[in-house]
Image (cartoon, rainbow, N blue to C red; front, side):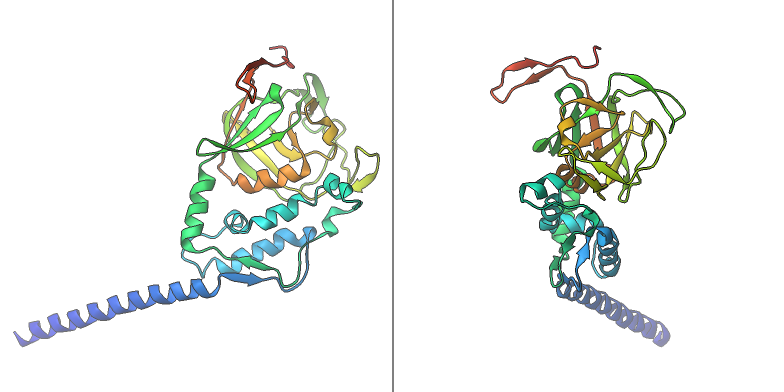
Length: 298
């Protein structure tokens, strides 16, 4: 009887200690998370080193917070970073009388800048918002839209694939260059793309801009789609020649402005849903029904 009573008492004390330890751990975790709400940039960060820097911040803090920290959660919690990246668009810089030959050398984060590490509540809200994103592309309208919970957030001009079949050395076959329609998801981000001419297979490193000036190709993420369960190499990526927007000009990919590509990237984490359609009847801002030109003559 004494032995049984002793066991019960020991178990009771043990349970109290475990509960106290768990409560203490939760309190400590809360304190830790509140203490690391801001991460200071220790030295200037260029676009060329931006992604490695962001990855290092995520790696440093992911074990200190009570949620899954990711690049997209971190940067969407600091929207000023997206604004700064968008403003490195070559044509925005030119409009400010600033010619940039090599965008990768631009300083994007300055020493002593502070990056917010979101709270659990903020991170959960951001994660929920990102999971509700839908990218909608209407080919003959030359528009890419971003919806969140069915609410239109962004509308961007785009270029689409040409209405032609051409031999591409990269694929070693004759390819229909029209942009493919269907439903799918974002399956890959290429944050440091290499540039190849798909027709010749040759790699290139510089580009001639619309103003005929030559610059190094910018480092802006490319987004790969999977449409109708097929990875056909159809990407969403920036063009260095925005005069081609609103045209059937590409080799099948969806082209955007450089600034818009940064925004799309940070609103489209892996798994984001995408719908690519070919609707010739659309509504104007006034609500009138408009007939678009049938660029693919379907």
